[in-house]
Length: 122
Image (cartoon, rainbow, N blue to C red; front, side, top):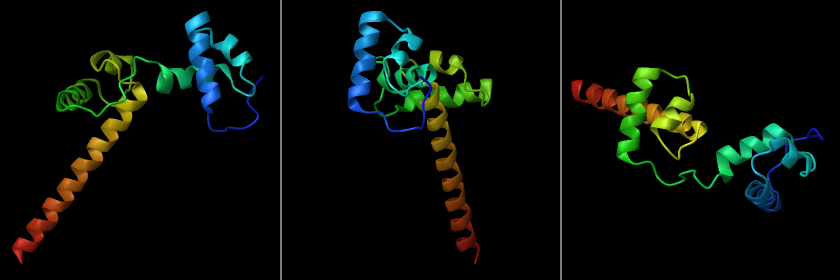
């Protein structure tokens, strides 16, 4: 059944997905059919972004940040599975979000440096 409206995922739904994947595999259409109001795509996205036990939800290491910066310089902003292969355990969504936060931090640091330089020039 197609979803009627978006709603937060419940712990019960999460548990049902995890148990179903363990028993039946990654048959997203089958899993969605057993979750009222959830589509195959929603169930798949929930698994790959949140529930897969292989996801690394810990803090990013300096090594991971360096690999991300290097990969982005080579691959650009096309957040493909190539990034995920270079950063095992990190989802494409996590990688894109981390890149955005690194870029924002860099812009803020530059703005602070410019502000300091302007004060010193007075």
